Length: 174
Image 1 (cartoon, one colour):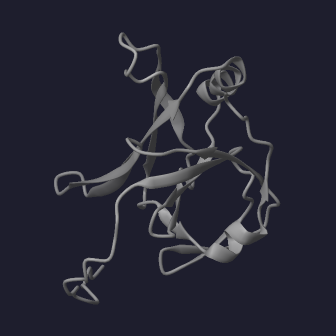
Image 2: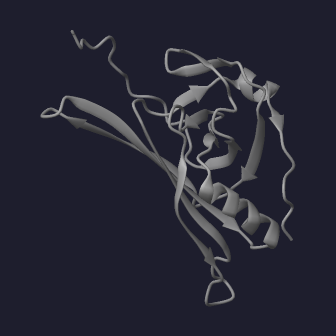
């Protein structure tokens, strides 16, 4: 099999910004069949309800490619770190559900991109802490890390899919 490159890449303008704006959890398989083209999900066959978690600051999505010449394998590991400020019982109960499931996660960034984490295998809550902080100005909330291992990096998700999706009820922490 030929593994020929198809394009180069120029230096982009400095118009992008970092950061995650929100994440949307969907039960594994809830998206149904995915239609993809050029690294983007362009259609889904399911009618999922997306559970939106708003985040701000200190939440990240990182994907690492691992390729082995010896084994002839390549795979991608994504790590999604969420820091949810404030603690209350409703969020604690939802985190308990996330801990025993393997949702697919759509991550929204500040550049109006959407990324699907856990396309074929789902994502898992691999660690988390419920933080009270020590001082008045310390972080008080939940720090959660989700992991996903896939054959491909997170796919982009078309805006039209997000526009057509149904959002579930959100918790309003005080």
